[in-house]
Length: 193
Ligand SMILES: Nc1nc2c(ncn2[C@@H]2O[C@H](COP(=O)(O)OP(=O)(O)O)[C@@H](O)[C@H]2O)c(=O)[nH]1
Ligand SMILES: [Mg+2]
Image (cartoon, rainbow, N blue to C red):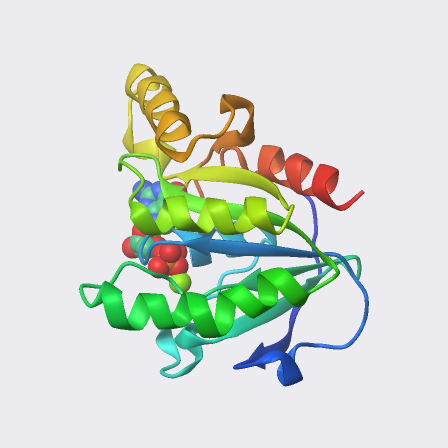
């Protein structure tokens, strides 16, 4: 397992609070409970880096983590609450849209999706946002440990089709079993080089 240095750089409600500095950025987005925090923690070998979910208030903001002094992971709020029309739409409009369109060093989107579930409208919208902003898009299919090999392969096809992305953009992974984590890193390295 590789050692990684990671620290919280900034928590931002709007563009005035985005961190200064020009390191390439990768945004992590996904439905609540998809496994986003666990994945960021697994990628950085940290237990608690991204568990801001337990800090009330910070979950609705962008959290910027600098990793190894060479890349910044931006943790977006989880989406897909029951009151989608108000909370989620507002989040896309106020937080995600300006960041996607005005953050020059933003290079890629990691869509975090539970490998057991069919992508929903918010997942599809997120991928479209990424495409419009000309980002590289990959899909981390989390909780792969919960599926058999054949179910996983079947679901990967289903997820790629639902999102309209190439199957090569998908990485099955398990933060719990530490599987597929190096493959996610490989794809991130490709996005920032
Ligand atoms: N089995 C399994 N459970 C996971 C995995 N990743 C996350 N979880 C669990 O899924 C739940 C939500 O994870 P979390 O990272 O907080 O999701 P977030 O809301 O997207 O940040 C937690 O109970 C995690 O322990 C995984 O790879 N395998
Ligand atoms: Mg979380």
